[in-house]
Length: 237
Image 1 (cartoon, helix red, strand yellow):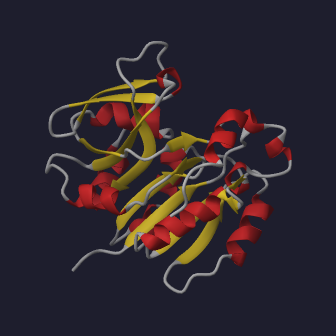
Image 2: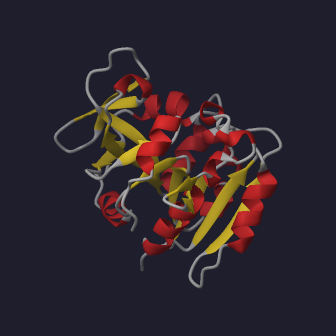
């Protein structure tokens, strides 16, 4: 029997690079093609067969929570968890790990925008190499120094990871979308010291144990006004 899919959408960021837009609107609610970015992710998750979504909130949390209350779905539950102080990407996952019990988990940074759906990514996770605890979505970036760049072997397993180097070796970037099972959470709980940040504290210690799936569709970090303008032209699905 296939396990249910549950997703944690990270939506608590301050969006400082998008100011003044984010002075009064949280980054996850910035419109892309007329629809809030968070809504685009919820729709993708619903289409992928996701059972339940948890959204962390912090900055302008009341707006995010009001949007979530307005979201209607007959097949997917959506709830929020407030962080008075930001816990970090890995910290949020560990604090809410019981949410994932008995499911295939997804961790998604809600401040990215992508064309295409998540079905092929989830299929790649199901077919991952036996040694892998995590599956990572990757994409081709035109600005590699601003991303985490991965090097992979012929089985698409990460062999090296370079986080925001001035001249990284390649353009295959970490898309900050991850799929995992309980064995990954068990591993996370055993890490000492307890990790807070995913990119700098978790990924470097899992070299050789991360499967990748590469999207050839457009994928953008909505971190700058220029990227936000580009994202308006992404196809919806």
